[in-house]
Length: 383
Image 1 (cartoon, rainbow, N blue to C red):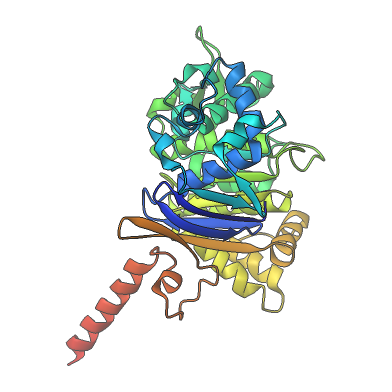
Image 2 (cartoon, helix red, strand yellow):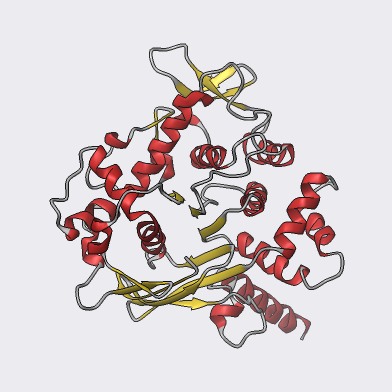
């Protein structure tokens, strides 16, 4: 999928999106970002989605509205309005009815939802059928993928789940360790009657619910990235083309978000197309910096400096790839008069007359206003 246009989907009045290798969505809460991300997966993976739901005993009785409720979650079938909603991708019209006619194929979009913390119950991934009919499909599927990953052996050995040699480059592992887990290790506890993931702090095992908020939010994201970044010479999952991550920054300190930035760039290096929805200006700061650094001499070296990377084979390949071979797009979900329009703000130009662009979809609006007020206050003090 290279381009997606739509009208009247949920609270979104209009959208026209041309995707980059990394595409970032920003906007207020309840502005339709999650709906659009789930729509992207539904368009790409409709056949696999219907097959998976049937396999686990879900039945929408050939009714497209009931299917929308099963997919997006209870009460969400109303986001699609007959004779009003239009969706087109790469010049192909899309409707929910067409999804029900699609044949099964491997799913090509891996979506890590914002509600990922609910996927770990008592420190173990929940099964698809542990969820009810009211829960969104993407939460069920993500949770099931984590469960299969753990059952396949990640949680069966004596080695820690994190950090683990051979999974992720050492540069990324070290960044995660320093900023999120400190000296602690994520391990599998098999001492009870049920397996569970625990945090081992110098021999003391802490159950999942007493971890910090950031650690709990990050753990399922980490497991998802483990699945996407196979060890050895395999760069990526063959069938997965798109990685979608909702609000990856939840609960994390800015230093931890810096570690996330490395992980996003590593996904790009491995050949995935990445979509991120965020409320963090730090993620857009990276995109803004890459776009301007790319115009300078020694651009990869400057990016390594920004990311605090040592000069080695991994960092050379990473920075060269994301500077010279990847494209970046940013879209702002702008709510006005109870309707949302999706605006292209990809230039991120601070001098742009359009505040949506200059304030990066509102992410820098407060810091800009604070600077103006402080400057004005200092000027009046001088008088």
